[in-house]
Length: 578
Ligand SMILES: O=C([O-])CC(=O)C(=O)O
Ligand SMILES: [Mg+2]
Image (cartoon, rainbow, N blue to C red; front, side, top):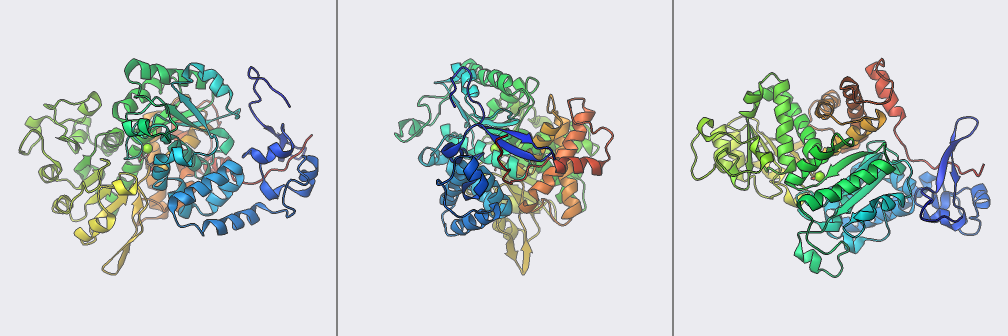
């Protein structure tokens, strides 16, 4: 089969239905090539008939396996590996060879493998991406090809992408600028879209926007694979992202964009610039915001208190910090407070201390700055630090999105305990090494009284003969369901109310199934995502932004059934040439 660049062969197969309505693959490539295209390759699970009709006879090991056999065999290999990054490379290798197998393996061992394909190991994969890079995956736009963005998108061998995770790598997790390496986070997030959000892998596209890096050490590193110059800024930067969005809209008009790990002001600027142009959301601002609101709601329920009774101190004023503050403000208003009353309960600190209106602050932080005259407590210096704020404000909730390990010291945690018998302490920065405090320390310092959640996974803590599970307050509980719902409803826009409903749906799911916990266990990600998706669809209909999914008259249960029915599950489809 030949093709030229003007009419590229943009896919390698069609999915068709036989007379009985069963789906099958009609391949547009044959023979050896089939074993090299991850969405088509079945490895030794090609049936003997397929081997003969597809030109594979003699190319494969004689044994014909089932998908289950392959999963069992690979898992045995996997368990021999010790090092998390090696495991990551192993699993990514499976994904790049045989995607159905990768997802079958991952869905069978979600709890064990999520920390490998996703946080925290993905943080290491980002840092080592140039070294572990093997074969192409996703789309990389850089300053070298952005002027040919349409052609670059035309080269992507997928015809119907519905969800894109795009990063400019300026603030990966809590580890900062990672240049080209950020591609690993886009890939990792999309694995969750498939395993937990039911979106078929052929509908997902990871994107790296390589606008350069502020890291001289990367620029100087001969093994670094990204473009080697300083980051674009200002108008040049926005023009680059404009080109990406325009070309994407043309090639994939049904796609949603998840903006991931953009630093501070870029995160807010990009979100606002495009959210009415293309259905899009920022995972760190909105996804993290929703997941934290959900956990705080459940923790308040466990304490027998209300959200509106809390005084909340947040350390970190990046995209995550301000996004969480905003979600909590909306939650406080829903709990009956006015906007001013809600703001009066939220205290945000950046590296200079509490945000105060007499400090020189970026625009996006200004919204949460307190007037020193009405703050209600005294402080020394230009602005109170974390300890002074916890004491002065009477904090009952402590949330960390600072990216700085150790921020929640024993003194700070004990000062929070002095304000309430059961403080909420959420050291949420990722990956593990950047977490503001270890859950075991927080529980020890508070003699088990604190309600703790982290962003990265932690083992349960044993204390005084009791076991305390540590909730994972990671946006993984929000974005797969949020995106899935948006895809199913073919939304024109993702409203703040839809994101808020995602938070309440997760809280309700947790309360129903795990009343003693603030987040479900990770093994329940897909079950929780289905409920999040249904809530998002309902709100999209209310907001008048849903283009499809005639579900207006469905009962809640019927809607959930509909969403469940759309969930992609890994299985090998038969090949047929007809
Ligand atoms: O990726 C994660 O684990 C959560 C997240 O968005 C971040 O930390 O930036
Ligand atoms: Mg993120």
